[in-house]
Length: 203
Image (cartoon, rainbow, N blue to C red; front, top):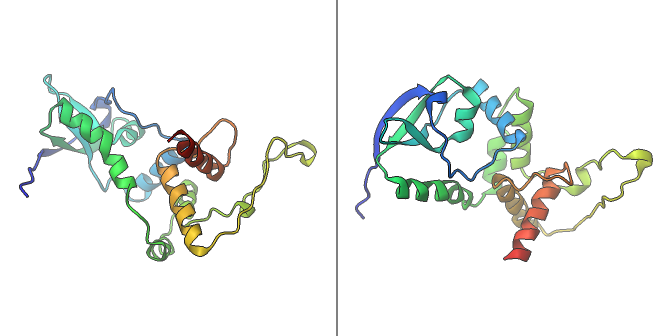
């Protein structure tokens, strides 16, 4: 297979000089932004943003919008691609979904996250979510007057280990897609499960 190398160069430019892609379809919940800040604070930049050069010489983002928004005028590493608008659109549409298609080796993930230490509360929460802590019985109900849970209901399922792995993987994927936010519920796991059910019903 003849695979072309479309990377022209690596530049370091102020993040604020990068043009957001007007077709960007990703939104970023506060939890993700907070976790990113934790990673940047503790590690720094470990991967480049991706952009293409427009006719006026400016760089338009393909990947890395949240990082660019987070760091302001800080210089960031950017891979500049030799792609046209149609190719950039294809990358914009497929980069994140391709990554989300990866499946999870639960044992390997558990071993990995057990070694990770962080002082960031947001990053720790993200790591805990990755480890599969989706037991609905472990989630505190919302604080409501007189212990009245209406209109909330607590639902418990008993799952075989293999079923639990499938549910965990689905919730993780829904969260990666931004399906853990909602106006009705502050519980990200519940929102992610509802997101999955809605996708099934609308499919």
